[in-house]
View 1 (cartoon, rainbow, N blue to C red):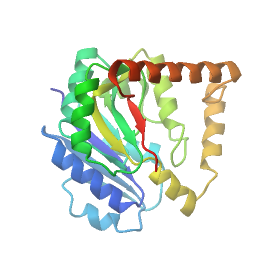
View 2 (view 1 turned 135 degrees about the horizontal axis):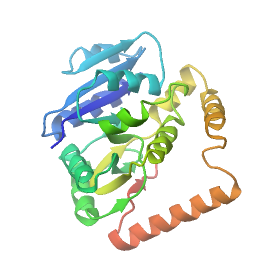
View 3 (view 1 turned 60 degrees about the horizontal axis):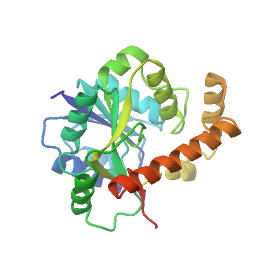
View 4 (view 1 turned 90 degrees about the vertical axis):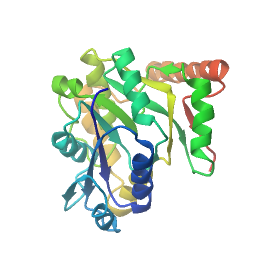
Length: 263
């Protein structure tokens, strides 16, 4: 099985970070390298990082996701690099099953299924039920909060575009570049994680700026000559395709690969 490095960019939200790291330690049975990149946290995150067995990179200010991820990737040694949000909680066997899925399908990027929202249920028990029902489910899509990326992808297309500030659009840009280079990507129903969703982005908007999305979109449009969603026909086609995929997954497996919990 390929060796793996896990990279997490942090900006405050220490309680979410602690829960994320605890789940990785508890649920990862194979050797792994953990790399934590702190973007100028001021809430006790740096104190937490002193207690964690990991490679820690400290930035004096918030450099954004792309720059922090790239710092972590450059410091990593694994054949596979996981890019994780700090507001996810993983489940037993998650890395092993994702890497096995990657190797079976010769994918450049693989992602788990996810439940989004408050964590008010028994995640491990639900994950067991979900993965038994959805083990054969595959969606040709990217789930950016948790991506395992084969190092050959970085070798061919480079790292994340640091022209995107804070967080937003850099994942879609990376996806399009990956697909243009001929790599396949997919989500699997054989792994389920929990994602609280939008925790760091909300913190950035409160403490620094709420204009970063517009800046990122302008950079994306200049680079690709279009918006992420595209024109009316492209948006309509995407919406119809997503509805069809979700209905198909529900019909075949009793679940969709991204489930949203009402708050």
